[in-house]
Length: 192
Image (cartoon, rainbow, N blue to C red; front, side, top):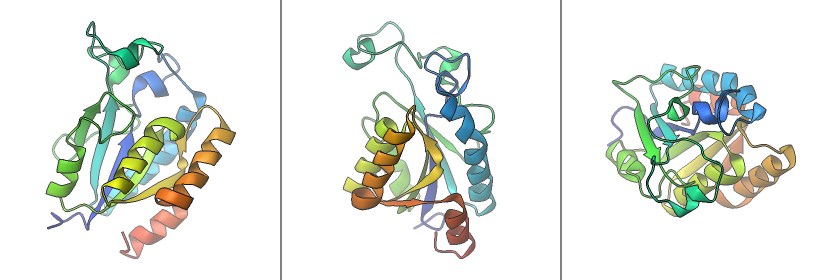
């Protein structure tokens, strides 16, 4: 059962204000650069009737979390830092917003259940950071027998070299890395 999504979902990883806004607690200019590109992919996936899932990094306020304590404070619940960047509008009737506390969108969340409930096999992955949350989410997707497809121009981290190394590894071991135009061709041809 594919619920009309053709077996494909767009997963937008952590494009929240703390990462995308110049006022964010852990802002990288690269995230601002990929936002309009991700917006194009979002628009195309909506046009093609694909499922859209936003992963939203979120740390609990005032509660113990060894991982969060070892890092710069960011994405604290109750702050606007966890809000999805307004350049990527959420459709509350159709889209899923799934909060996560670790790098992988699958760890400790219901992402796998949501994907299975909607008959999804192919995951178009965009967002931030390629070496952490993108890589971890793609790795778990691979482990769970999904087909991860990372859009090259729509992922970023704070180093172009690190970004490229992880994209190479993803292409070699975990899934596909495609350009936006290649993705659009696959969507137009009904491959995805």
